[in-house]
Length: 178
Image 1 (cartoon, rainbow, N blue to C red):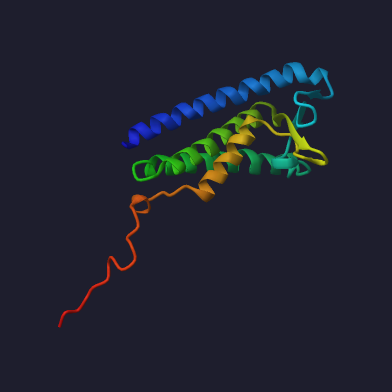
Image 2: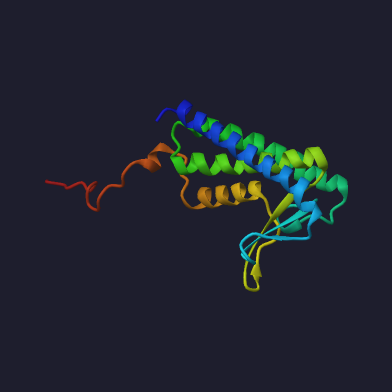
């Protein structure tokens, strides 16, 4: 498939992910701030509005404001620019897992970056749990980032040579008939 087709699909998925992320965060800020917690599926899925100044599970929330800005805004922006350039450059030879994994990682990163630039915090509102096990509070962008990382780590291949079928044992063995 042509790189332009892959990149068009990646751009469309990015836009859809961003719209869904920003829309659900907007709804959470409008509706959920009035309630301590809304149970959707018992204790399995709960909705609760939270503004997170840090990263995943509030990592870095205690950092000084300027340090948080440097790490979670400036460095994330630089990473997203690099990741986008890398995705565009490798699109022709990359498999679909590579394209989709990096697309969702970039889209989620942009979604959370929009929050940080706009408010200085990221809006979270989803909590999942079974019995005593539960997640921290997260959002759609976090789902995209996590899913993208998993796909990139386990299924993505960037080079065309990695998409070629492997040879069978003994197929490339030279026989000397002398």
